Each structure stands twice: as structure tokens, then as C-alpha cells.
Length: 344
Ligand SMILES: *[C@@H]1O[C@H](CO)[C@@H](O)[C@H](O)[C@H]1NC(C)=O
Ligand SMILES: *[C@@H]1O[C@H](CO)[C@@H](O)[C@H](O)[C@H]1NC(C)=O
Ligand SMILES: *[C@@H]1O[C@H](CO)[C@@H](O)[C@H](O)[C@H]1NC(C)=O
Image (cartoon, rainbow, N blue to C red):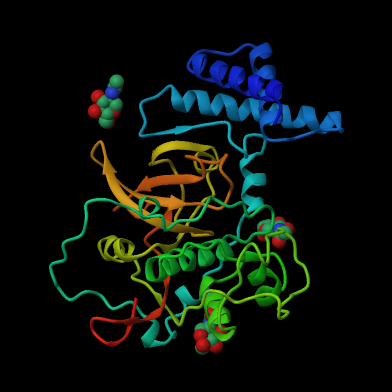
């Protein structure tokens, strides 16, 4: 990015902060919009479309200013979705279809075993990034593929925890070879595919394109990371969730269909949202700030959304349905001290 663009972004950011609680002039809003377009590499040749987007942008800006002027645990911002109506944003990503969660006929062996009253000493806070077990924030684009991103993210983390190596893995392989197209799906089926396929390739070998392309499992593509199982649950039990997240990052689901979720910028999200989960995310930690318990979430909407791509969302109140779904991969490894194979 050129220095002029950087300057514009800096200037516009300052403008955004300094004026955020007062009423803005048309001139200011226009400047913010132009800066936002530069920052998000948006170019409109169609001026009618550009003006239409500007009207939506202004409406979102008003909503953001009103919210940020109040006393809340979270802030909104002009992120990647700032020129979309809430309906457009919703259509952009309804990518989670956890059939197996609703289906109580899944195998007993894949069910999370609840800890039977054992008093566990869990840390008060966990952030798997601090352990170097989380890859960079990725961007699913317009492929309805959050299921693939959270599946891959949990395997990346588990692999780091077990082997010490953090390797970015391939969502595209799941799109091309398992689902054979963009669209919503179930992470459990992706786990099953990876197990049958003896593993998954690296992102470097099989990079993300956000569109379907023909499956390529040629010899030069190496399956570098394997898992040998997965677990579903615990469901609707945020205490048990905490135990699991203390062990490894997990797949969770949220209802992301709300304007507050769309424009989330930072803080502990307590905004309105339903509980019909439609978006898969990765839960990479938990904690408490200013008396507010939260889950730490890695999203797949790039770094412009949320806190550089992450979100803290209220914990212990089933916020946005986050307690409704949980699944995670397992891996066998040889435990030298115990001289036997163990699973994590
Ligand atoms: C903001 O809200 C918190 C929690 O409800 C409250 O403790 C605090 O006093 C409020 N601050 C202001 C400035 O109103
Ligand atoms: C539930 O599981 C059964 C048996 O595996 C399967 O036939 C059925 O299609 C599943 N239903 C859903 C909604 O996934
Ligand atoms: C994503 O899902 C939305 C809502 O179902 C749909 O309108 C859109 O066409 C889908 N896009 C892709 C690339 O699958």
C-alpha cells in the first residue's frame, strides 16, 4: 500500500475517533467513506452502485456512532462489512450446517464424556495464541465455508499441541475434494473425510481460492497432518466447554445474524443476536475482563472484522447460541513415559 493511502487511512481513523459521539457533517462522512474504500481495496466503476453503497455506509455509521456513544462492554466499527445491509451481510455467510449435532443417533464413541464430579483445577484464563498454537486469521471470502475454516483451525492447533509444529492446513482441499463446491456443511463430515483420506495437505501446497476447483490429490500433494477421531459435545454446558477449551481449541457455532455482530469491533460482545447457529467459529480460549466472562473466538472473516479477526463474546449465558454446538478432533500419540499410545 502506498504512503498516500496509509496517510488517508490514518487521517480517516483519527477523524472517526475524534468525531464519534457528535453528529457528523456530510463532508466528514464522505471522507470516511473514501478512506474506507481505499483501506478495503474497493473500486467502483459503477457510480450508481457506489452511491447506493454510500447510503448504506452512512446508515451503518450512524448506528455505530450511537452505539459507541453509549456505555457498553463492546464497540462497533467500520469493518469489512460496513457497506452492507444486515440482509446482504447475512446472505454472505450462512455456512454452518451441523446436521450431526441435531442427530442424536451419532455413535456413542464420538460423544464427549462428561467429567463425573472430579474437581479440576482449570486456569482462570486461556489463550492458545500465547502458546503459539493458532495460525494467522484467514478469510473465507464468499464461499460459505466457515465449517472448513474451523475444522482446519482445530486440527492445526491440535497438531501443534501434540507435535510442537504449527502448520497452516488446506481448507481448499475440503472444498474441492470433500464438498466439491462452496456452501454450508458440517465439520463432523469434514473430520470423517480427513480420517478416511489419511490426513490433510498444507495450505502452502493446496492454497485457498474461495471458489470450487477440481480436486487435486496428486502424488506431489502431501498429506502432512492426520487425526484419528473426533468428539461431539458437550452441548449446552459452558462449564464443561471450559474444560475442553483448556485442553485444545474447538469448533463452536454462533448465530451471526445481527447488525451488532456484523459491525463488531472490540470488547466483550453482549449485543443482540438469536440462537439459531449458522456460522462456525473456533473457540481458542476464555477469560474474564471487568467482571465479564468471555469466550475468545477466532473467526474467518479476515483481520478487518473484529479485534484483528478475533472476538470476545459473553460466556455462561449461551450468547448467540455458542453453547449449542461443540466438536473437536482427536489424535493418537505415543506417550514415552507411559510406554503406550494415548489419545488427546
Ligand atoms: C457503565 O456501566 C457499568 C456497568 O453497567 C457501570 O458500572 C458504570 O458505572 C457505567 N459508567 C457510566 C459512565 O455510566
Ligand atoms: C442421522 O444419522 C443417520 C444414521 O447415521 C442418518 O441416516 C441420517 O441421515 C442422519 N440425519 C441427519 C439429519 O443428519
Ligand atoms: C452462500 O449462501 C447464501 C445463503 O444461502 C447464498 O445466497 C449464496 O449463493 C451462497 N454462496 C455460495 C458461493 O455458495
